[in-house]
Image (tube, rainbow, N blue to C red; front, top):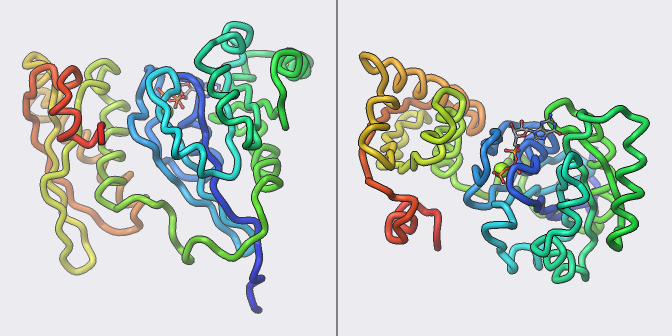
Length: 290
Ligand SMILES: Nc1nc2c(ncn2[C@@H]2O[C@H](COP(=O)(O)OP(=O)(O)OP(=O)(O)O)[C@@H](O)[C@H]2O)c(=O)[nH]1
Ligand SMILES: [Mg+2]
């Protein structure tokens, strides 16, 4: 059967304060674990895209670093719709936040869907109260409360996002899952694995640098350096007889193979780059500034 020529297709950015559930949301909306989501502020350092497509729709979701730290004005001005996450346990404070107010103001030409997150903290009878509270303080297009890790509200949010995407030709080729290179997606999967086994402060201060990415017989061979910010962290990342490093490599290669849909062999090395998060040149070298 011939595919329709014009479908709902476009870009939906996810913005919000640190730890408000943006990455959990992109993972739930695009049905893949592409962006590290953990209980630590500032995990997402670079915008990450994840494409969801069917015969009748193509949505490129874009997860972004917290607005408190950085705002990519160009990125937001070029999307079709913005989902603004607000932690519902801190709704009143967040709605007054100057950073958030100025973001809403600067992007008022775009549809903004307000997405109260963490609604699993409240009984269903109270969810209407979030809508009232938001509608009293800002102009809004839509309000969709969600709990991304438990899937609540995700279907509804998805259909509301679609309403704001124009009908146009297909933007992405069949099978395309992200705008990023495999190399970048693999390095983010290594970051996800760091957070799942290391203390959060050590994981957050470990940079991943892909040193070699080669392809043989459709298999990926990747050598990556894990740069810890302190000498004392090196032993923790390696673990007893290398057990922690092996664990990280196992989790990361499984996750990365799933994301890039190919077998992948990973070789990890731990290096010390003292205080790299405070050093502009190191941030540039690791791809966190550009
Ligand atoms: N209970 C509950 N936990 C949530 C919800 N949304 C996110 N989380 C958890 O909250 C933590 C932070 O979520 P993230 O998705 O990393 O938040 P973020 O906004 O991407 O954080 P940064 O990248 O640091 O800005 C993770 O442990 C998530 O599993 C939710 O609706 N309910
Ligand atoms: Mg994030």
